[in-house]
Length: 343
Image (cartoon, rainbow, N blue to C red; front, side, top):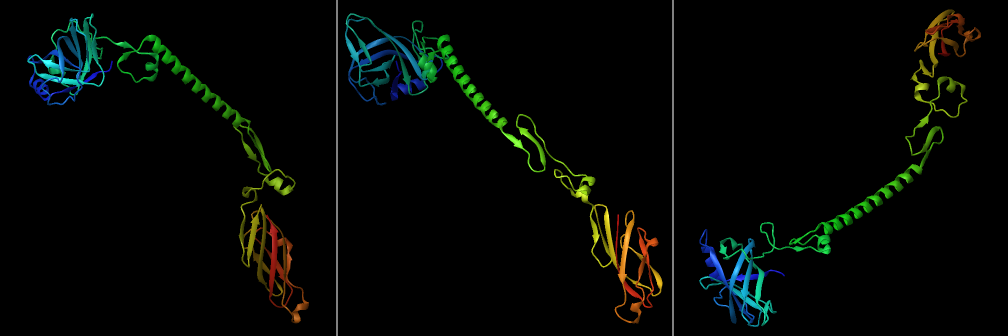
């Protein structure tokens, strides 16, 4: 049964607030009425009261809840839609009124009434109830009493706080939770396994100059092989790449007397004045690292009576990695150009 919410009267509230220690307020009687009314705080009497019963015992299972037991041994028949609690000095402590019958008694029966009343204030510490040996209050965390066993639906819902869980209902709840968790884990594992299988089924395939690859069940390495200097020189490999490391370093000086060097090969060029009827030594702008193979020189004076003479020629025996010499049989100095190759 749900708790009855009792509305306190001004007089009852004042009496409780004034009580303390060993001088507590005592709830002594229960008044009954079958007349609906508005439980205003100014009430001093219970409207339509037809009977008053002594409170047999009571206890406070919570700071704002009282459990009362009253006993009517009369042969009267009655129905009550409301009630009031009276203190031992006759003060109306509080009242409750409803639209429907909340308490009733048959003619040939004794009425042993035990019910819970919720008070709209935490005041029960200042209230006394007389004999507490014959009460069956609802069990709480602080008070021993009677508790109802929770149904399986209440255990599954997990919202009821006034009932007790049994091993069977708890076991059923835990089994259902375990089944749901296992199902969720299985579904997640299956989905993950399918995703992994889909990934490992994919392949990485190398193309062009790259080699290697395979499916994703293991780490894969894609390799591009560098051509060696010999392979670059041979010029036949179609599955290797030429890198700057193999071609270089490339150095050059693009001037009138300059050079270019790459892949070990060097070409030098320049312009100089060949002395008339004499030999002239020429130094390369950049010496060859190892040797100069050949030098070609050409030049002369355009027109003039000396053009019949021999122009400057390279003295082959003088070719070194640093330079060479020419001999000119012209009677005039000749502006001469040259190209040299080596490594």
